[in-house]
Image (cartoon, rainbow, N blue to C red; front, side, top):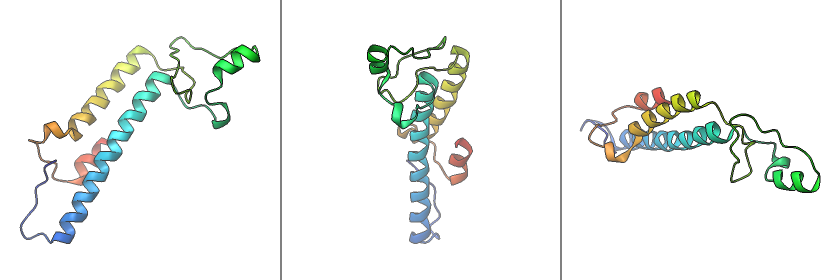
Length: 121
């Protein structure tokens, strides 16, 4: 990524600022992935219930709640009840906007301040 700096800025201040920007970019990328999982597969299940849907259905004959936008989570960590397609589309636009901000291929635009990244968080 590109970052503008003054020649009068000390190395210590510059390195601290760069590390803060880099860490914010990583945090934003993580949040985008988490939000996409949330809109696709719904909220997380309690730890003691994760990955047990098939076992409960087969051996305990219990019914798993499956809403109108159900999509089974391949990891078994989420309940599978995602959001409506309209909300999914809106949230995906937000995720793409954040990705465009942090994307390395878009490095012709300099990220000059932490505030630009904080705005996306």
